[in-house]
Image (cartoon, rainbow, N blue to C red):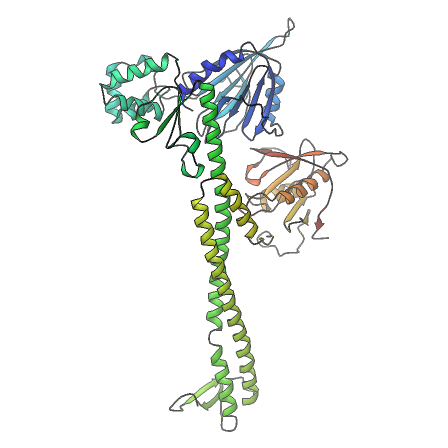
Length: 573
């Protein structure tokens, strides 16, 4: 969502929110939350790749998750507050909600929620009455705006407001950048690639400054004519055939340049309807892409295993392909048993397989007779022959699996509907061989890990449980891999639990539930009927600087509610 689209949306949504009170802030994803007002619901996403904000008009309830510390703090400061301001800051992709909290005289306070909808830098800030940061949602490297400091919007460089750009300035910007499009993106506030391309397209019909001024006037009038542009009509979109970043556009006004590139325009009666439709389409396409990525990763793992197996089979066949030579040596030793000449390293015999019947040396231990040496060669012959034949059968089976794998790859690449992915998902993940549980490098299977208990899940996956603060520290930051699943009981001291998982592999839900039950059982919430357990990939777990061993913070997580119990078998009892 660019800055101009956001401005149009705010203008249209504002009447739906005034006057209104914030009833609740609900977490619906790792970086997605819903502001529930009495008269409306706003969904806010600070996802790095697609930050957005839009009004939810459907009655369906988004799936709730356990609230993050930021959301809990925002709920405490803002819930029940009256919305007094809903505005865009600095003509940028920044939204400010200002609340008046408290109704009794002397108890009224003010607080704000600022949402920065900027790609790869999206964030949310809770501010007090003096505009100081109370908390921020995401700790970003390089962002020095921390709690206790006055909130300052991100710097926009040397950009200036569109209304302040003169003809001479615009020409200077164009000369420096080399094109109208690059000049507007780099030097004019609010202009992203979409509107900059529109200005460039209009500049083909008139001088750049006049085209720019007319476009700015149209955008400033706040009379929306929203359109969504796509390669095909919206009801014909196939998620696997559309690049949502390049092929799907949302604009508050009618654009000229998309039609020049063959995109179809679909008009809407309101910004709210257009934005919600656009976001649903994007969510559908991104969901398709994520599911496809998971299946491609699973097939990629199978391909690597088959490649390793092919290499090993080729090595086995190469080592065993000379098995006939052992039979030949055995037969020659028996045929020459009476006249074989003893040599330091074996026997010299007549080679009856040679038309010229030349003498050859056959290796043998000094203490063996020709008959005993022949018996040893026949034994090696049968052993190598069995090995070669087994390798040949494995090679044929592997080749059949390889052909099937290539077929699945082709079907997956051609898939363009969620329904197709659903059928392929069962076939790919169901057909995938179960991966053997792995152990840390340098550790033999079955060897005990001090302070750590190990369990088998019902799916034969390893689950590790730390039994002390030091063991938790070592388990999480030394033994666990970045893609393993880390679990811990919410709001209670307890064990760190690790569910072993291959990289790129889908989350094994039955094993996840069993690991969560262990995390609940080995915590101070053991006697509770139901316990909330947080889980995330290990790479999102970070040490707390200066904290005690085992104390961590989570960059993102999900939650599951389970009963504290042990239903799995311990490995190292």
